[in-house]
Each structure stands twice: as C-alpha cells, then as structure tokens.
Length: 514
Length: 106
Image (cartoon, rainbow over the protein chains, first blue to last red):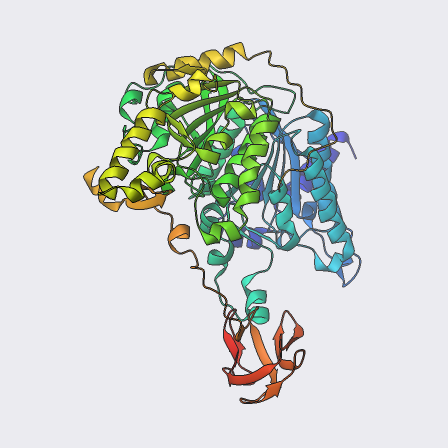
C-alpha cells in the first residue's frame, strides 16, 4: 500500500473514531440540549488550535463480553490547544461512548494529559460528562479515579485546574472537580452528587429530583461546589475563556497584563456608600468604580452573597477582590462566606495575584445554627488565609470594621501591606450601640431616663471611637484617604509592592482549619 | 430605590439594627430547641422493622426499644436510661423521616 493510500486509510479511521458512540448516540446527546465532547473542546479553544492525542486507544475490559465491544477513544478525548494564545491541556469525556464511563484506559488518557499539563506548567481544563465507573472493569476503574485525584492534588496551586460539568458527574467522580480550582455548571445539564436520587429513595425513603439534589442551581446557590453558573454551554465557554484571560499559566508566572483603561465615569465612588453604617449599598459598584473599564469578573456570584469575590484589573494587571457586601446579611462573616473568601485568598496567593480587600462589616453572624455549624473553625480560615498570603495585600476600610471582623478582613495585624480608610470609617471593638450598653451600663441603669442616657452615651461613644483616626494614630491605618483617591492609592500600592519579599517560616505545610 | 428599600429587612448585631436583604438560607435556618431527654427521635430516615416495647412497660438502661432499618443495616436503638414507656408513636413497618418522634418516656 502506498503512503497515499495509507493516509486515506488513516483519515477513514479517524473519521470513524470521531463519530464517538455513533450517529444514534450523538442524536440522543443533542436531543438533551448537549454538545458532543469534540464540539465542546473546539468551542472552548482558539480556532484550529486543537490537537488530539490517544485517538486509537482501545479499552481494557475483558469480562462480560466487553472484549467484543469497540469503544472509540475509550470514551474520552484528550489534547492540547490554546485559549487567547495561552497553551492549554484539555480532556472531555464522551457520553456517547459507553456513557462516558471510566475504565482503565479512559483514566490513563486523562492522567496522561494531566501529567503533560504539569510537565509543561500550563492550565488544565477537564470536561466531565460520564455515567461514572465502568462497572465491568471493577477495581481498575477505581484505580483510575484514584490516579486522577492524586494528580489533581499535586497539581493544586501549581497549574490552574478548571472543571466543567456538562452532564452527570456522580459518585467518586465528583472528587476530581472538588479538588480543582474552579467548577463550571450549566442549567439543566450539570448533575453532581455522591449518591443519586434512586439510592437516596431506596435507602432513606427521601424523594428528590436529580435537579434539586445536584443540579446547576443547587451547586451554585446552596452548596457552593460550583463557582460559575451559566444558562447554556455557550455562555459557560465564554466564562472559561474570560477566567483563563485573568489568571497566569502557572504559579511561577504573573497573569498577562493588558492595556490599562480608566473606570467608567458612571460609577461615582463618592456617591455609592451612605454615611449611615446601617444603610446598605451594593459593594460591587465600589469595585467597579476602581477597576479598569469598570469590569469585574465575579466568582461564586450566587453563593454566600454576603461576601463578594472575583477578579478585576488595575492598570492592566489582574487583582483579586474580596469585599463585604452590606446589601446581603449586612455583609457579615459566617460559615459560608468565610469558606468562600478563604479559598479565594489562597487561590490568589498561590497564583501571584495581589489581593484588594474592601471592608465594611458589623462582625460575625450571631446564632445557634452558626455556632453549631462551627463558625469558629470556618471563620478562622479567613484569618489563616490572609496571614499566610504573601502576595501584595491591600485593604480599604470603607465604613464599619468592628471586632473580630476587623481583624479578619486583612488588617495590619495579619500583615496587610497597606491599610487605607475612608473618612467615614468606624474602626472599633463593636458598634456604638453595643459598646455604649457595656461601657455605660451603670450610668444607663441608674439614670432617671435610661433611654435618654443611652442615646447620649451612644453619641458620646460615636464621637470618640467611630472614626478612622484612633486606628490611624497607632499606625494600624496607613492613610485616611478621600473616596475618589481609592483607585490611585491601590494602584500605587501594587506598583511599589512589585518586589515584595516575605519571611514565612520554613515548614512542610501548615494545619489550616479545613 | 424606594421599591428596593421596602424589601430590606433589619438584622440586629450587637445592639445595632442593619438594613439589608436576608438570604433564604438564613431565613429558613432551623430554630434551636432545648433537647427533651424524655423523647427518642429517629436519628436517620428509615423503616421501623421491629418494636420491642409496649406502652406502660418498665425498661432498663440498655434494653432494645426498636430496630430501624436504614443504610441497608438493621440499627438497634437501646434505652439510654431506665424508665417507663409513656407512648410509642410508630407502628411496625412504618417508614419514618429523620427526627420523627418514636418513643416517649414517662
């Protein structure tokens, strides 16, 4: 056979494999509103950059007549490509081939591309659409999962790992996304759970739909397992590309700097925040008032909304924002918001992204449910994450910063590099009402008119402590700044922190309050 | 804004009332109740497969009260102290949710 004919033969072989599980299975996939695995990869990557490997892999199953079956690519596609010119390793499980079930060779393909991503120090994107372990392959299938989880763990904090859930991802399989940095879900398509509705019904008698148990909304609003929610696969892919644009390729690099742009004039920073600390406002407007083009790429938008996290750019450089949200639960720290912030702080620290913190919180959320849910342990994560972070850390105290909340939100005491406060900032152990009730308890109780006396004493306390100057007098606040100077001060802080050195003690690793 | 303002609720923290939206998780949180040690509730959803006690029966600490089948296991529930059974709230083969009142002591 001539090389030409052999080439024609190759093309035929490729075409056959590219059909995955065949026309019928593809039709079924499409009827569920889903794209095929190959379409998904091509939609995420820059045009004509996808290069596929291990197309001719054959599966290992020998029992239960499996040896007579052909599973194209063993149900997974792997390869490399580019997103906005950034090199990417990618894999996508193909549900049309044996339900995307994971057998030994399927797992080997995934671990091969993971190893490649680690060797080349480039981001890894994993698209999950699988019925789970291939039962016919027994423990080999479990071994495959284990190998993936181990690699996810080693790669954590070295290369960015993105998990995209575009179908079922159940049982042990969920632990790979859980170990990665960011999880993307799509409405009506994503399903994640450890045990499905059927098992829950037989074992526990509880009836719940798949969507309610582990659908996209559940994971982006209730559990916090998903970081990005989209209405369609197309929207999801845009989110992935935008994220890749904000983050560096690996932990030794900085994110790509783009052309600097001023914030939009419509965000008037000195008109957003009411002077009364009890009145709410949307903190995202403050963030947008300082970022380039007023762009803010929010992470965990729908979960633990009392804290806001996400990426923006300042003079073209990526910055991570952590900000209390006074419009939701008064911006308190609680179990979920602490988890959310702490993980994001550690992400930014691992990938050389400076952290800007906007502080406006009354403290921790009171309540039996919070205490019993371990708010002590969860709240401690924020302290741990800030203390440990060695990237430039800048805080701006906009209004209230009371008690433990003040300390936790990147205070000087946890080694913030720069702490700025607006003139309306109130830095104190607690709000004036609570403080007056404690300090002047006797005077209030003994007064002829206790209510009058309480009001008088609250006013007295406010006058004395509800300002930024007590903290500034001790150097805990570096500068009290005008609201409109905020962007300029933050940008300058980051510019002068470019050679920041840290003197963390040498250790294998700390014991964070997981 | 005024429409928006109407939806704000107040949240009291250390004597100060803040105006803010509440989350559904916060509003639907389980209210804490003082535990009543005279009652035994199901600690897991399941099926009551055996009831070893009758109302008015005197039992000793460690006696089996009932068996609840859950997670493919027959879980024996024993008396945490000695006493007299006031009332049994379930029947054999009944499916019970979590935290359902099963037995009350005098």
